[in-house]
Image (cartoon, rainbow, N blue to C red; front, side, top):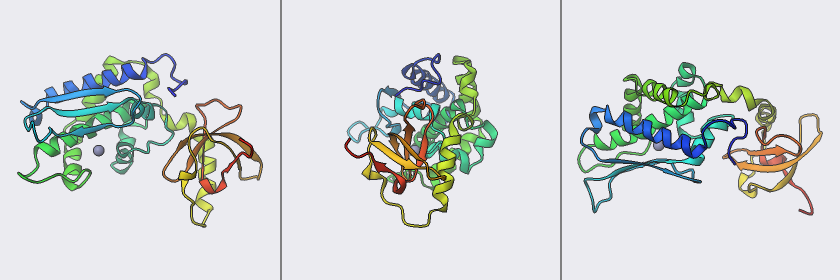
Amino acid sequence: MYPSRVPDLPSVRALAELAAAVTCELLRDLPDAAGVSVRIRVREGVWATYYRPPRPARPFGPHVIQLGTRMVVHQLEAPAATDTSGREMHRHGWVRTWGDTPRARLACVLVHEIAHLVAHLRRPPGQRVRTHGPAFQAVLLELHARGLARQAWSRLRELIADPRLDQPVSATVERPARRAVRRATRVTSPRPSTTAFVPGDPVTWPDREGRSHHGTVRRVNPRTVSVVEQGRPATEWWRVPPRLLRRRPGE
Ligand SMILES: [Zn+2]
């Protein structure tokens, strides 16, 4: 599952560990987090990347920030950053500042998780912070304005100089996906659920010229299904609207 187009980078696990170390450094310099016990951990093979406040039984800590290695893979290879942090990069224009590169995405994810921590620490007594609500957004924008993303980006750069982390992700893999997506935008009929498909399903689908393609489901997205075409490298894929996908008979 790890990206074969970046073979000489440190393993995804190592990359996640370095990102965790950078998070630790950022917190050390952050006045908001002074004296706060924060545990930063990496979990292998899971997406789950989150901030969790201390358990009610132990109100003084530790706070936990978890980085899942599948989230790291997503920052390295997804043609469009479709996670919360990726959408924020587009919404707030950070993608123009930093480019849609794995390094910039990772830096923004780290700041996102730190923003959860700071929003929690600043919440009015007895209140909960809405996960990605206005209070969180205000903290996130403030941290970016204070240069935390730049700091994260620079530290990641110092630790992992590999220039491939600075290659825009979209430019290298988007072309097949874009064709499929353009077709999807012309479709006016309601979308059937993508949940009828699971990774590994053998499928066929037509392209705009009506030619039939064969492949395997790679990932199920909220609106589309990512499929790798037979005979094509796994690092290239199409995003196909589920209504165009048929499961290959007899398999
Ligand atoms: Zn979040």
